[in-house]
Length: 229
Figure (spheres, rainbow, N blue to C red):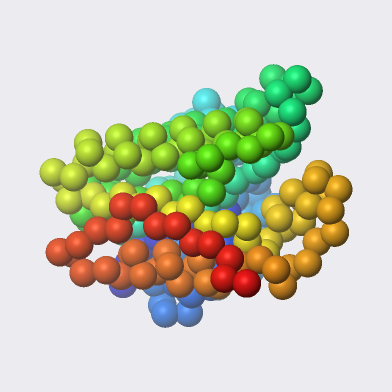
């Protein structure tokens, strides 16, 4: 039975992945931003453990984790949580930049640092759910895209560093996916939202599980998922 640490399990892609892994009997350690959210996740996924820490304040994650019980074994670390705040460069504030960089890039680096010892022992897997914006930035997407470009660099460096330790690293680049984040994006763009036009989170979850379940003789490095409609 594998143990998976998951961020972003409360909605969208993260919830879809957590449901699939929970249904097959794997052990889940679900990250939550606060105790209230942790209680909700524990109720939604009976038997799962929770880990509380604010991704927007990565400097305090180490302190927060020191007061909680971390899993002895970690077979996969799934970075799925993310935030987005669109706007032109001339209008984005430092607060908006910091929030997106903290949650989308610095916190994943810090979480990875914490769990690397367990991942090395288990010869585990780190999955970064990136974005199409991690490969190309468009107008009004500068801060979010910068955080996701950085996440690609983090994954690529980690893969080179940990290959000899048997740790696999995968980046997944979904296109627009039907999720609460996509609702927010449409609101910021001033467009009507139609979930039927975008990727179902379950489809992205399928690709993530494929990467996790791949036999040890192979590794998926970069996986792009685009809407088929």
